[in-house]
Image (cartoon, helix red, strand yellow):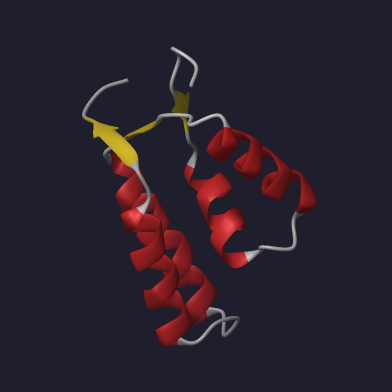
Length: 85
């Protein structure tokens, strides 16, 4: 594990959970996992994720159940949330 945590942007999480065929995201995610990387993000990210998944659903791209599952998976990720970064 490295000493510096990775600050994850919401779009990376959305791409990883919704667009799992993105090879670059998959490679980076695997590298972070294998390195035991620690993740951090601002508290606002929870709202950004909720909004992004909601937009997929309202656009008709995913069912309510799929969006709920993706959001639940996102919120279970080992991310330490901070009020300020």
